[in-house]
Image (cartoon, rainbow, N blue to C red; front, side):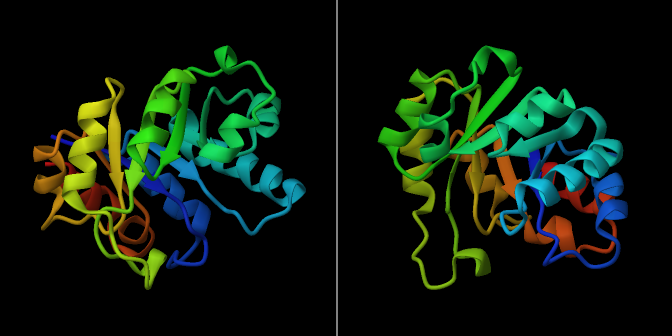
Length: 193
């Protein structure tokens, strides 16, 4: 089975967002990255408090290391630029992930102490409309270059997740499917098989 990480998007969510997070957290997912880039720091903090109640230990804070520490959350996911500028001791966090878009970034993230990376975007996706996907060959190169877990992101679904596994990825990150599906528990279970 593949490990799955859900990436949130309030804009894509059908129905009540916090209720959706509760359902996702009860599903097969390894983690839930709260990636709500449009919010102010204050708004993000308020949402993170609610998301923490909904997701418990599965919640991964995106970018805001100070908010993670304030809320006692030990998992963080960073864009590479934010990781490079991170001023807080990475040792505080049990998990530190980074979004990587090249083999060089993946290697750098590993050297900087990341416990996992996301690599993408692998397949065409509406989230990156107009940008050509990097493809399975790219994913395989990243997986071969690092010894930490790699999660593919971008256009992952039941039809192509086997290709992700065959390329060497530990699993996948999914946004759209998790936010719009009728039954998150069944969706993530089916995807992880």
